[in-house]
Structure formats: C-alpha cells, structure tokens
Length: 188
Image (tube, rainbow, N blue to C red; front, side, top):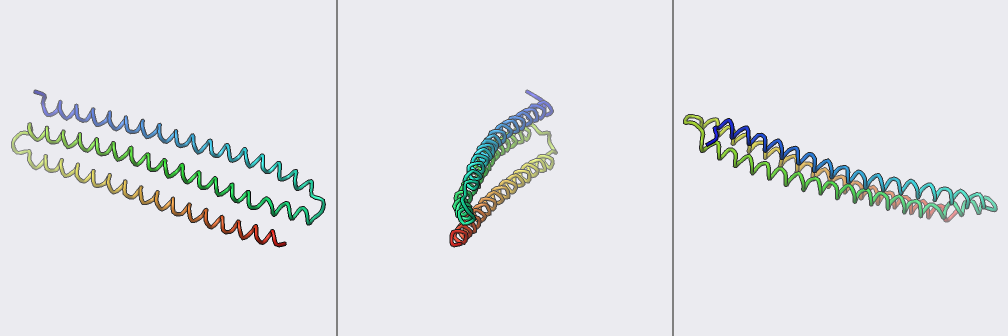
C-alpha cells in the first residue's frame, strides 16, 4: 500500500501531465485557427490588390469626369459587399474558434475535477485520525476552484456572444452606410 505522500505525488504528477496535455491541445487549436485567419487575410489582400488594379484601369479609361464618377460609383457596392463578406467570415472563424476552445477547456476541467475528487476520496480513506479538518479544507479548495473555473467559462462565453453581436451590428451598419453611399453616388 502506498503512503499518502506517494499517492499525493502520483496524483500531482498525473494532474501536471493532464494540464500539459490540455495546454498542448489548446495551443494546436489556436495555431489552427490562426492559420485560417492568416489564409483569409492573405486571400483578402490578394483580391483587394487585384480589384484595385482593375478599378484603376477602368478609371484611367474614363472618357470624361461624368464617366469617371459613374465608374467610381459602380465600384462602391461591390467593395462594400466584399468587406462585409470578409467581416462575416472573420466573425465566423472567431466564433467557431471560441466555441472549440471553450469545449476543450470544459472537457479538460471536468476531467481534472474528477481526478482531483477521486484523489481526495482516496486520501481521505487513508488519512490519519484527526486530519478531518484538513480533508474538508482540501475539498472546499477543490469546490471553490471548480466554481472559479465555471465562472471563468461563463464569462468567456458571454464575452464571445457579445463580440459576435457587436460584429453583426457593425456589419449591418457598414452595409447600411455602403448602400446609402452607393445610392447617393448613383443619383449624382
């Protein structure tokens, strides 16, 4: 039978290994999501460059000021639509990333909590007489830590929801302004 110190050492080692695995998993997920955002940005930059070059050629081909204004106005709406599509895609990647990271963190926290609870139960069986208050303090510490994790996850979820709502509102506002701008420019 292992001593309490050996059990505690083994449980601590197991907990550390679980935390390290969680960090590695989350890091891999973050890099995967960063790769998606980088790809989106590179594609957007490439498309913007190509569109700008084409727009410049069209504007240079304008016969007079009226034609120049007409060409400029015709390019406003497609540019606004592309900017909105970029914003929606970025928001989608961000939201999916947040959900995936939260899910992974919740699973890891649940697993760690379960292991800790089992460790405390095992230690309690072998605890010497008179150590009941220490065991209760340890149980209380675990319960408070779990409550803190739950609060952190809830706060993170609410922050992500708020971010999604704000991006949606900003996209709608941008679309409204772009449509009004296009309508005004088209009337001139």
